[in-house]
Image (cartoon, rainbow, N blue to C red; front, side, top):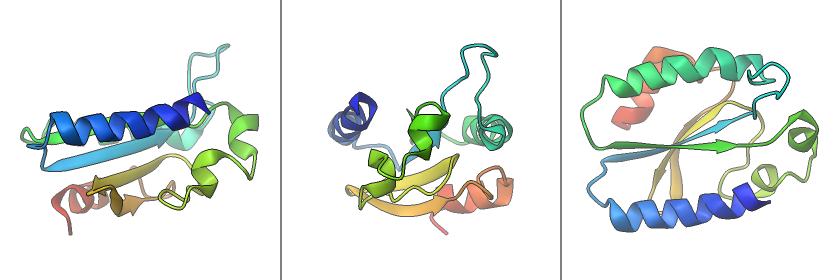
Length: 126
C-alpha cells in the first residue's frame, strides 16, 4: 500500500517540479526475488532493458517513474491497489503507461511492452 500512495505523491511532484517534461512514463514492474536478485516476472526481465535502452536514446524531456507491484502473491491478489484503481486498471506486468494531465494517455501491456516500435509510438504520442 505504501508504494501505491508514494506513486501519487511522485506523480504530483513530477508535474509540479518538471513541467518542461514532454513525456511522463510509468513503468510497472514486478519486485525482485530476494533469492535470485532478479524479477520473478520473466516478461519484466525481458522488457525493462529494452525500454531503458530506447529511453536513453531519446532527447531530454522524458521522465520515467518505476513502480513495483510487489512479490508474486501480492500481485496475484485481485484487490491489488493498481488492479482496482480506475486510473491504471493493471492486468499484467510489465505495463508502460504514458501519463499526461493526471490521466493515462497511452499504454503498453505486458505482452507488448518489450517491442521497440510500440515503445516509440507510445513516446511519440502516436
